[in-house]
Length: 269
Image (cartoon, rainbow, N blue to C red; front, side, top):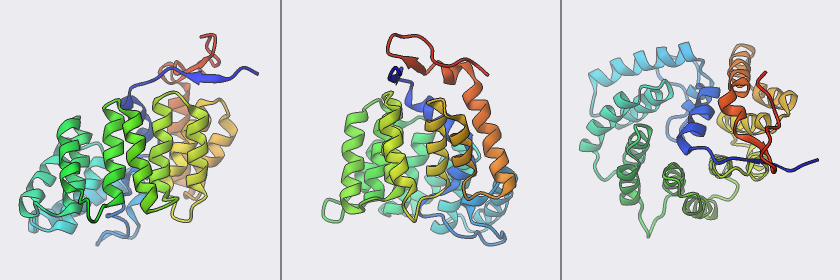
């Protein structure tokens, strides 16, 4: 059996596929877990309509208290989850004025800048937030994600490994590291890190959906669907399976998958 390799896609393209695959899974952020007041479900388990409701609830809270750090961070995170990146950035621009030295705020601000394609400024913000005497693993991971989007995968992996030195086996970092290998066409390497990530107790749905994508891109649809269903409820699982099938049936996704001799190994379904 021939070894499969992948032509290197753009970072933005593969990150878009990953987030489109499971928009509810992309909502989770280390600083925005738990139930939002007025809603009954943690953000990482919300469907698209529930995320839209969360945005509405948080928007009203933000209007009443635009200086609130917790509300601003949650609101920006939910806005990014629903693709409202410019609005998320506008929220964070207001919050960072009130909390210019807060690492949580600077980290979310950096993510919002990256989501709007302002990668170099995002990198400067993240670097500014990092303290050499008290390094924050979340900032190392965020810096790695931005470097990946700047097509600097080797430098990105240095940052991920710095994060793992502080929090060994942290699933969100392992997941980012795995997706970094997707960006350079190494699906086997990506799968190794993602399988390690999914075994960790704190692994969330983003990790599961990234693994499902990588398995699917290697042609194992049955296992990909099984992984994608995971711990999600039936409605959310079916939504994710629908997206997974759409992504993997598109010629643009399959064009990434090649044999070593350059011949396509899969056809559009």
